[in-house]
Length: 453
Image 1 (cartoon, helix red, strand yellow):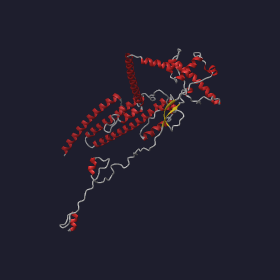
Image 2 (image 1 turned 135 degrees about the horizontal axis):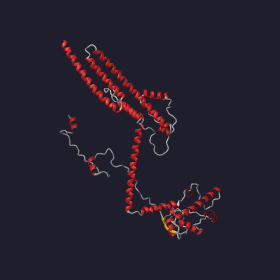
Image 3 (image 1 turned 90 degrees about the horizontal axis):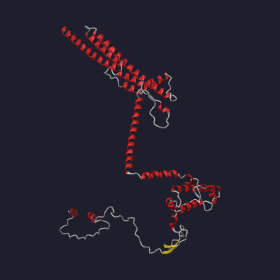
């Protein structure tokens, strides 16, 4: 019983009251919000909510102060030797101003009197004008608009550029020749063989035309702009129409290429059904005849060079047995599979290849129609033999029906165009009439049989 009381936390009757334990107060850790701390209470979080080391180091003053001094300095970018002062660290022992390295000088051509007299003379330019141009280009760092503003002559900006780049090209070529001979001057920079001054050239006429066109474009009025926009819309419309016409032309060319054997194959493949007895064969033969005289030739070509062998037709029978017959016919006619393409042989080869494909497909269609005719004749003979035992009415009706069906099949196989259509209509009427006669004959036989019974 004592164990139960201990488990339930119950005290015995004579037991002394347990001493009251004081709850230890827990302080909310830094970095944890009040709501989160109210949820976890005094429990220790399984995962630390605040990282012990956030990766930031406390900046502590080391107690050492760097000394700065008011020091004079000179810049190698200046040629007058001016000395200025600035605050600098005492440990900075640099002799030159640290921003002097950003002073980039433009290299202008230089020449001697002998070089000018031998290579640089020009009728439109004197020696004084050339020297003045080189001096201004060095002063204003090849800003030719500013150079033209300071120029006192009548030369344009394009003429100033043309003269400067002509002098630079000649002097650079002379420096490269001296460098190759090992006679380079001490103050002369090294010149590469692919220097832009040597590779490129300045076209003054093209630059003048470009600026004139830009000036005319800039001075347009609203009416001129509207007219140009209208012309652009019309040009886009014409371009779209040309693209559509070209697409239609290519489509018609493909139709013309497929008119020989492809059209005949499509018509022959869909001309006969099992129940029709070959009625669509006449249209197939008519279409094949029209395709044989159709347009043939190479594919439509755009501008540019192409191989003439690309115009050779690759049309052939899709079935395996038909492909064998096709190759056999080519060998029989002594036609190579891939002849030497030329302007004369390509259209002839494509024409005979198309004709052979159409011929093979027509032969296959003819065999099928002949088989149907033989089948109808055998049915006719069977009906006649069966009707010989009676009075002949049934036999006559069956014979007439079989003869009409066979006639319709033969007419469909041999006829074409409007004639085949008329023959099909007449054949249908004959079939109706013979069917009516067969039905009447059958009715008479039924009446006689009932009487005899």
